[in-house]
Amino acid sequence: MRSLFVSKSRARISMTAAAEARAAASAGANAKRRSSRSVQEAREKLTYKSGFKPEFEYELLLMFVRNELSAAVTTPLLAIIVAMGTMFWAPPQQLMMWLATVFVSKGIVISLCRQFTKAPRDDAKTPVWRAKITAAEFLYGVSWAGVAFVSAGTQGESAHTFIFASLIVVISMRMLFASTVMPIVYAGTLPMTAAIVIRFALLDNPFYWAMAAMAVGVHIYFIWLMNGLNSTVIAMLEFRAEKDALIAELEQAKSNSDDARLRAEEANLAKSRFLATMSHELRTPLNAILGFSEIMRSEILGPHENPTYKEYANDIHQSGQHLLNLINEILDISRIEAGRYELHEGPLALADVVEDCQRLMRLRAENKGLKIVEAFEPDLAQLWADERAIRQICLNLLSNAIKFTPTGGTITLTVARTPTGGQSLSVRDTGPGIPEHEIPRVMKSFGQGSLAHQTAEGGTGLGLPITKGLTELHNGSFELKSKLRYGTEVIVTFPRKRVMEALPRLLEPGEIEPEKPRAWRMGARR
Image (cartoon, rainbow, N blue to C red; front, side, top):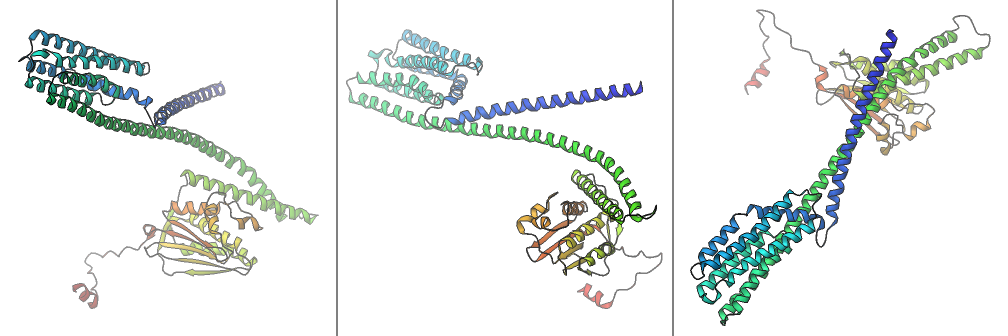
């Protein structure tokens, strides 16, 4: 019963995790679709780079509508002011009819603008709305043009001047409001300019003809200005579309990076679980293999009748040891990359650790005919570090130097202070060196240079990455210097904060601090 309950609980947990994963994947897919749609829309806007801008029609018309609604009261007030000025020569009945015409046409324009703002953008047919508003604006312009013909027979010079000035002001206002949609500009202002020209052309006076020509010139100049303003507005919309495209692409890139990060985290979790499982599953049989092969190689249970069996047992033991080292290196680099490598720090003498490591590797170096030279700076302070990690750093560097240095070469070990107060370990060999373009490759996990494939000794390509990772865990720096046919030098530097400097001795109660030398006291006074 208990096992059944446990299995059901695990099944529920698995189902919950799967549901959460599906929900996260669905949310990520929706965000990705939204960002892709935004990118597509923004790019469609940027497709039109010449001629009329079909994709900007709605924005341009919306700007006009907003301008018109914001001035829904001011323009009728201007009509009332013009009517009050015209009362001095025009009968009130005609003025009231003209004002009514202006108000009705203005109401039609405002009503269409409000309907346009309420209509959903996706359902709005911009060309149809633009045609409706243009027709209403033409009616509004015609109603304003009617003021030029109110009581035309009784108008004098002052009346004509007043009408000319009033209509020019209204023309300029309408052009500013409608500058985003040039067809509306033409529909709303041409009737007023035509009214001025017709009214003054009918008068038998060159002065009024000049005013009519002036009205035409002013209208053309205003049109030229509005074309420039319209181009500026369209350029602004293009810049905004480009900004929206960039933002959408950034959102899409972020969505892609989030998906990649989730996949990487899942892969990293799977890798960690796999390594944790394989660590136990592989080490257990390997320990048995190494133990029995050691017994067989040492002939503890009796000598072998056939000496070949002893050689086979030795091969089994060496292969198992190599496999165990490989597993340990993979686990080390995995823990370092995951940030789970725990340091067990304590005081140690760097020179002593390096001396122990070179003693372990000396026999291997002598068998290959190599010479190891030590250059240790005396009286070095202790270092606060993980001794196991420091040993692994030194052994990895020594192993690489011995592996790639040809017979008769020299390996130099240097332990010294740094100019900043820290300590450094240097391993320099007289090997063939590493080509400059291969240095980034050898610093990657499982990366090996061309020289590694030519040597008889194998390797995993994890020694240098592990060394660099352990050095950085100690807040140190790793530097690889190499030149083809000139050898290789690796310098590991530990910062000053890890050097354990001796504190000054505390004075006993009643003890007087010894007097400084006279030369020191004189120098201090100077």
